[in-house]
Amino acid sequence: MTKKVDLKEIRTVHDAKQELTEIDQQMEAIRQKADSADRNMTTAERKEFDSLMENMRAVNDHLQYLEADKERRLILAAQKGEQQRGEAQPKQSKSGWYDLKTGDTVPVIEKEDRARDIFASEQEKNLSLGRGLRAFITDDWNQAKEERSFFTTASAGGMLVPRGVFADVIDYARKKSTAFRAGAKTIGLSQGKMGMAKITSDPTVELKAEGEAFNWQGPGLDAITFEPKTVGCIVRISRELARDGNNVAEMLEMAMANAIATFVDDLVYNGDGTGLQPTGLFHKSGVNEIDLDGLAPHYGHLIRGWNQIAGNNAQPNALVMHPVDMAFLASIYSSTHGWVDKPDILKDLKWMHTTQMPSGGGVGEDRTSMIMGDFSKVFIGIREDIRIETTTIGGGMFESHGLGIKLTMSMDVQVAREADFCRIIGAKAPADFWDIDFSNGEEE
Image (cartoon, rainbow, N blue to C red; front, side, top):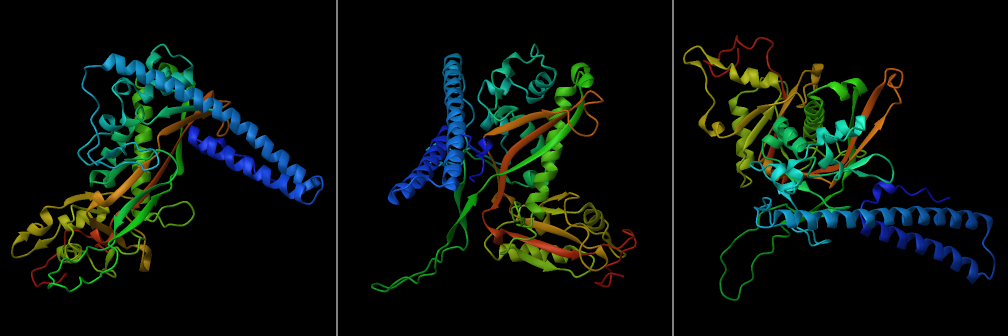
């Protein structure tokens, strides 16, 4: 029997119409099979046909909801346009990228940008996700009247929140995440899969004599495809705190931002490409690698990594490591010269630390790893709407008058050029950071 359609995956009018077309084609195939044999449908065919018909009714109802919601948004956009006529318009993305399916500009948030400026309309900039969440939990919208018009009821339950209202949480997360702070770009995905180009190799420029052919070096570009997967988190809160806590709105936003920042870093670095996970930098082929095999890391290893990246015509801008490696490298000491500062070639890198760096690999499960590279080549795609749902089930929440708030969103991680990165793996810092001497050129 045909599986019941998942309406959560049908997010746009276009998606709904496409789904209806596919269902109609499947139903027509069943009809034609019976007609060509000059017979009635078999019991199995009738069950399949009825199941498809049930899906068609559900998608039709969902289509009506989506069309009504689209009309509401158009009305709000027209009203906003009237209100903002003559005022400064939202900051535009500098990317110049377009979604070839819709013709819309693809919003891209670069390191120096704010999600609030690019994702949010002028009216959305005045809204607070936290205020809307608190009102949703308590069903008291007196302090969130403007937010109420932007929180739309989802046909499958919960509320849908536009990405622009969620922008402040994205900005909080970008301040916490090392991948974002290192320069990873946030891409606003519209619907379904979205393709982009990546550089696989630089073209070769050459001189040629008259009448001779240029050498063909093969393609320098390849495709990457964003395939957003559902990610989410649950925050537990008591109804009394939601009602009486003066800073609940801010704390809800910060809790979600912290969770998103940690999760994004883990995907960018450690995603292993299995199941729904994207392939992170520690598992992606094409990334340069230096294996220290249990040696204590020092500046020479980092310069080797820099050289591998530079040899691929790239310029690394950041070095991300585990806190234990940051502390060790900061403690390098020479009995002749005292504390050893990092070489000039490494000073232009932004040095950052995160516990999301691997720290339990190799012999003895005590090896750490680092990533150096140009993080502007890391793309983190986020779909348009965020879904908010609540529950009293589990963890004694019903008995304690508590509430679980589930936030789900769709996102994916892609890397535009693997050769712009180098992973330095298998490092082992000594237990005592301070008893180090490089006076003889070796660690003692």
